[in-house]
Amino acid sequence: METTRARVGDPLAHIDLGRLRADLRSVQRLGTSGGAFNACAVSAEIRQAYRTALAARDDAAAYLHGSRVWSRADLAEAICAYSEHEGRPRLVAQWCATTAPQHLYDAGHELLRRQQVVTELRELLTEARRTAIRQLNEARLPLPDDPLARARKATDVIFFARHHLDYIAANRNLYAANLVVHHGWDLDEVIEVAGADPGEVADAFAEAREHPPSDADARTVRELALITAAIAARIEHWESARAEAIADCLATGLDTERIAVPVPV
Image 1: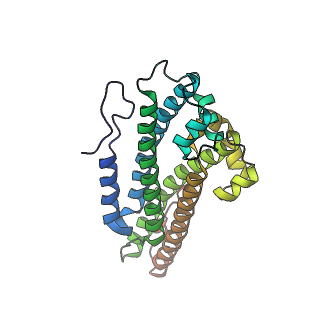
Image 2: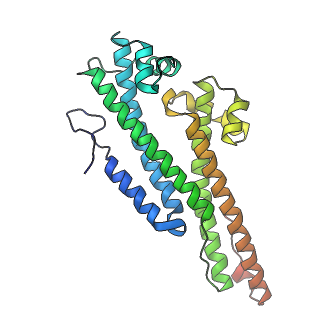
Image 3: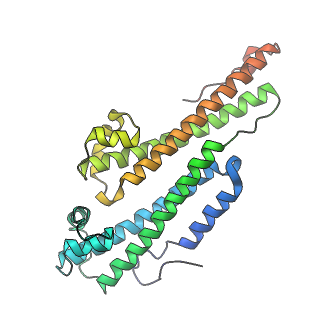
């Protein structure tokens, strides 16, 4: 099984890239009907591993810069692949300055190893999110023929979808806020990428200040914006199906107390 190299005190020891890939492939094989929200769940698990790897990478970068072994240009070349992109490594080094390890054995090699894991997880995360977006956009909800059962099934799915929507939208707002408070983006600029309400992003500023600068990037915000839009579109579709089912129930003369379907809040 593919894992990171095990070693004493290795912060990446519990990240299993092979298993995460296998989980994503399994979701992809389910197709759009069974896999849409499972793809969201796998994306969240990959994201957790990615954040762990980012924190470990940032610690190594801060150690190398703090010990004056590597310049910001050196770090930028390792982290961003371009030595002139010093802004992000500077933010990383400043953020991690107080928490970086006092000693890190073979720190240069360790930074490159951790960056490789970060890169692989980032690409896997993008693939998982693209899978979720595609499957959500193509998903068709199989509903029972019976109007009452159809109305109740649609209600259950809408409630479930809204739960996911709230969670993903909150993360989108947090990472959008991170770009503002740490990376100097204008609120109007980040709103255009996030497709979010300005007030929602502004409300996340305080929380974003407690998160590391490397925790957010524009690609993440775009991906989460597309997922929220896809879920919102599915909810709208399922709400129409529920309304149609309720109308069918009424047309058959079914007692209104039996067909009353609470709207999820």
